[in-house]
Each structure stands twice: as C-alpha cells, then as structure tokens.
View 1 (cartoon, rainbow, N blue to C red):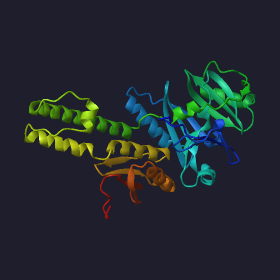
View 2 (view 1 turned 45 degrees about the vertical axis):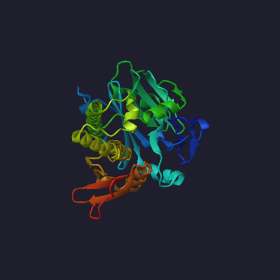
View 3 (view 1 turned 180 degrees about the vertical axis):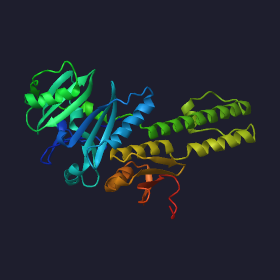
Length: 348
C-alpha cells in the first residue's frame, strides 16, 4: 500500500555543483528536496522578547525579511526553545546548479545543517567543504558559523567570545563528521504559520463553524419533516436528503450545497502564501474570494517570479496565474484563479 505521506528524494548539493542522493533513495512522490551547502547559508537565533506567540512569530518573519545577508535570499523561520531559528540561503549562487539539475521546476531547498543530529553545548562539525562551529542550548541551535579552514585557537576564541557564554571551552573541540538524518529534514519542511497563514486559518475555522451550523439547522428541519434512521455524519454530508418541512429548510440546503461546492479557498490561500515565502517573497497583503486569490509580494521577487509561478501551477489548485507589476509601489500582485472557479476577467 502506498504511503499517504510520500518521502521526497533528498539531494545534497556539493561545492562543485554536483549532487549526491541522501540515503541513495529515489523520490516516492512529490517534489525533491535539495540541501544547500553551509557556505551558501547563514544562521541566526532570534528572540523577539514578546509574550504573544503570534506577535513573536511576526517579528521573527520581519527579521528574516530585513536582516538577510544575501541580495536574493531564501529563508526559513522555525520556532525553537528560547526564540526562533532563522536560516537564509543565497539563491543567486544556487541558481545555476539548480537550473542545471532541475530546470525551471525547482525543488524545495533547505540548509544541509538542518539534517545534522541535535547537539548539546559546543561542537565543531567537519563538513565536505569546511568546518561549522556550533552552540546548542536545550536542544536548539543558538549559534553557527562556517569557515573553510579548521578552527584554530584564534578563530575559536572569536566565535566563543561573541556568544558570551561562561562555559565556552578555551580550546576548540575536535571536529566531528556527522551524518545527515533524513527524518530531521522532512520534519523541517513543516514550519510555523506566518501571520497571513494564521489569519487564513482563522477564516477557515469560521467557515467550519458556518458549516456546522448549516448541518445543525438542516438536521432540525429533517427531524420535523420525516422520521429517518440515524446515519453517520459523513454519509449525511455526502448524500443530503431533500427536506420537506418548508421553504426555510430548502433555502438552508441550497446554501449548504453552494458552500460545499465552492473551491477550497482557505487551502489555496495558505498554499499560495507558503510558496511565495519559500522563495523569500513573503506577501505584504492578500485577498481571496470564491474564485480567486490575490497576493501582493515585493518587487524584489521579480527574479524568482517564474519559479514561483511554476511552483503555484504544480499545486494543482490554480487554473490561471497572472502577475501584475507596479513599479511605483514597488510590488507585484499575483492574481490566481482557482480550479473550479471563474477565470480571471480580461481587465485583471
């Protein structure tokens, strides 16, 4: 029986632009995952110091968008003990090897360091192209830096001094080669909701409450109109009998059928936001209705626009994708027609 959650092929990008398949396995479905080498990545542990989880997450995403060390960056924000882990990777440096390997259908990207086993305290990891010094606290990576040459006493002292930790070793620990654990990488693909996604989820919860209310009132009408055997809730949703109690019940049933036949706007909106963020183009605004989704992304994402469009098309949720640039405002508006919904009008 095929897995309901197929594992993607994981390919490690080498410094010379070649790839090595992790675990030697082929993809069981879905897009492959490419691991960016540490020298093309940057890391920061960020603690916004906010009690509200949603406010802290918003602040971490703002930090990821504002503090990138690369002109064209991909980014990942993950909640961890004591704050957030923020990873950036250089999309300009990855462009050529990714195009040569995958064409225009880019894979998902993660820094290779995310696949390392978790640590405790201070350590140095020996990589294919250099060395990575790390500090771990409570199972969370707090600091990471890479250099091509081994860490001598001076380089180690500089790294440890910046962390301002009393237990820092005075001499560099031995450099250890570590395996990449595929389960840690696939787990890293699930990250915290952004404020936009959280808002979309709230809308989804409201829609769910509306559906439950519709089912409740419809059931009341059915009970008064006829005596029927009890049926499972899922069967009732699949085949809803026509009520006979009166016009109000008919109107409720009509509204229910119209609502249940609409495209899944909430899922489409969340997926669209996730794709944009995958390429470092977090939306600054969004809107959605029964037939389309609209995202406003920074104009700086224009170099990644074709890859974003391919990614959105591959979701199978959108029948039409139309970018509209606004140089005066410095934004790009992505207008997306949902599969099963009305097409975009010519003037859109």
